[in-house]
Each structure stands twice: as C-alpha cells, then as structure tokens.
Image (tube, rainbow, N blue to C red; front, side, top):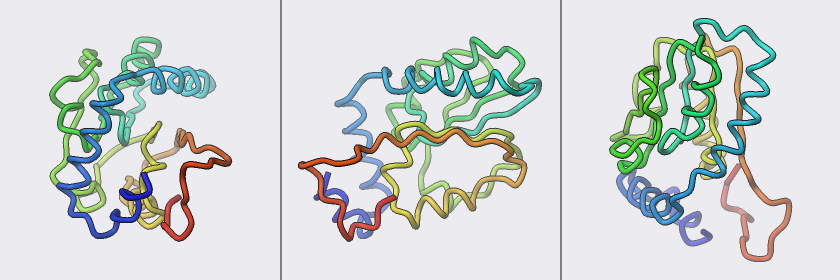
Length: 168
C-alpha cells in the first residue's frame, strides 16, 4: 500500500484503474459493503425515500445497492460510478433501478451528474488523496441532501506509514 500511495500522484488514470481492479478481484468479497448497507439502511429509515436518487462512488459490484434497494422500493434509482472494469461487467445487483457506470478518467474530470439526492461511498474514499476527495465532493450535484461515507481506516497500524502521503 505504501508503494502505491507513494506513486499515487504520478500514476495515469489507466494505472489507477488497473491497480484497483486487480486489488478488488483479489479481494472478491462483498462482506464490507453488506455490513455497511445495514448502516445505510438504518440512516435511510429516518427519511422519506420516495423518489430519491442515489449516486454511489466505488460501489464495486453493487452489493450495498442490492441490499438497500430491496428494502427501499420507493428509491427512484441508483447509479454506482466505479473505476474497476470487472465491477461494471459482473454486477451483483440485478435491480432494474441500478446502473453501474465505468470510467475512462477520474469522475471529477467528467460532466457533473444532473441529479442526485443521496451520495454514498463505502470502502472507497479512503483510497483517495485529500485533493481528489475534495474534487469528488465539488463534482457532486448541488441537489445532494444526504451523504453516507464509510472509510474503514485503522486508528493505528504497524504496517502502513501514511506520513507525508497526502491521504485522507
């Protein structure tokens, strides 16, 4: 992780995409996204979800979307923006309200989406630099009213050195 973090700023998008895809395929589990879908479902249970639209960053194969959409039939639609080609090709979410969009460049370098009420990201934003996280938030449409963010970073560790790497 330190080598990747050290190269982060100099890597072209295609290298970010390739590295991320190989990591995600190697960690072919949806447990983290399913666990976090419980938290998101608890949050959504406090609001009227009728007609609301979800934008997700880094939802990989759609496990969280599948879990949430099955419990909230009034959500209008869900778009997952994912850097991993394998996530787009082999989605776990079969709900007709769900779409997984791949990317040819960083999201913040594409046109802003015209809509969105909820922004969700689980197990993804911790891989961005602070600069890129800021650009991602600026890219979101003004209509976003709620955000659900989960970045599982340990409080302390002996295997990672984040000093001077500009991470979040």
